[in-house]
Image (cartoon, rainbow, N blue to C red; front, side):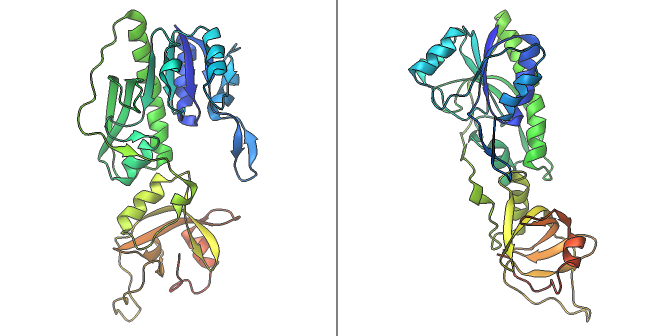
Length: 319
């Protein structure tokens, strides 16, 4: 089949590669180049960059700002049979979907109808889900509401970061997509409606990474993992931005040398350094152990190196 693939971030690349191995890529649709990284260099999306690595590829690349009449005509000209979308980032209207005789399918990294929307991986971590997965659905006009064609679920242990979970979902998604496309090509696909209450997740913004120390330690631990690598979680110390790259709920005990219990302090106060577990910070409920930190513009440091470079760390306020 001639496939138009629509996707942008790295999570979609394995699916693009799987399609290229087993089908004919009519074209690739991706978001336009955008400023990325510390230097804000304008770069193509990971999907756009991956096209050059496909052996013998002369695949047309469309980086449209919109999907209007002129753009739809260019897609019609490549005569695709089916649309496959994975994290493209835009909704498709009826005129666009009518270009594909076999319709469209979408790979979504959640157990639909849970976590419809643009940040399902992060939301699964933020919500403390015990399981998640990958769904392949028919593309419908309402966001992430299409009939299911394949689902694979797996358990979460509460230590996953969005980066690691994205990698896992990327490879599951590519395999499921290959299976579904094979079934569609043979006319053997099976579909069923989504069941259960739908939940939704919003688009994550850059400023969402600012830590509110009044929240419970468990929520902050989940936030730091969910926002790794983007947008990252951060606070401020002595007026400088402090990126929190890794942390965990602190279950140890710190006490004064005299054996007295530590006094109750405001959330965001550094209690001290547990040499085995990290820099311990008070929160709205419990304590958080910071294990990898980075001052803005500096290299990432272990908690031991960070504490060694900062005098009298106990009692300092973050926020």
